[in-house]
Length: 345
Image: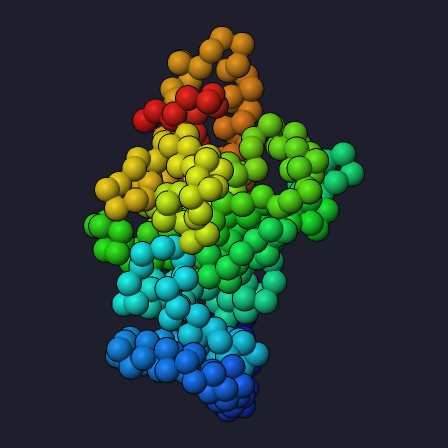
């Protein structure tokens, strides 16, 4: 804990200067990006004024010196949830604000200042594997760009990334949100709003899957997300459906349904009336007795590897002195069906 105290004192020493820089950056942002456009200025002013009490709560995030320093370099950060194009389609302004607040309040409460600073600035490697001369990594950070992405900064506040030799090949974006927004009784849940592979990196994705027991890239990311959820003390997650995805277009309906609806169904999530897929960690799995003869050895190896990934991700956050809220047990780790059939509880 002494290292955390020293870190806090270091951040506190520069907090006044960071606060002034953040304030000036916000003023410059409004002067350059908003005031210059009367229409945009009126739109932003209307969104802030109709949600003023929640906006003051967002400004209260500046009490965290790491967030203050981040706003100083990225002043639009405090207003990113105002436009309708945030997280998914159909979220009201109060709901968007509540999601943004819950996410960063949780990080403020859970992570040390040094870890939060790293997550905002870079991809933090939480799992590594060297195989065949290649480095495979699972990393946690802000929502990242991969080739072909749109609205990246608004598709989720954080992401788990799969990297091959330092190249981002697949990402899964998520945000910590109030359960009530998704009709859940849980205080906080994870909302998964982006599952996307990069363009022209399919050979690297295949290479990663082969090195990790043939587990698909998106399932590797879900396995890592389980470890993150354990560190945050969150057991429930919701996946956005195809039609509620931020970038959904009717002509791409089949692609979106394959990447979201079919994927969430395959891992055992159940559809909700509001257009989400809900599940709890650990994910349901097919009983080993029901696995086809000849595939049990492969299934055991996959499950053991996933257990290893989830546990190492969780242990990473423990080592970083974060105030992890969960109590993780390796024996509880499970995964989706190893076949193309839906997972069974």
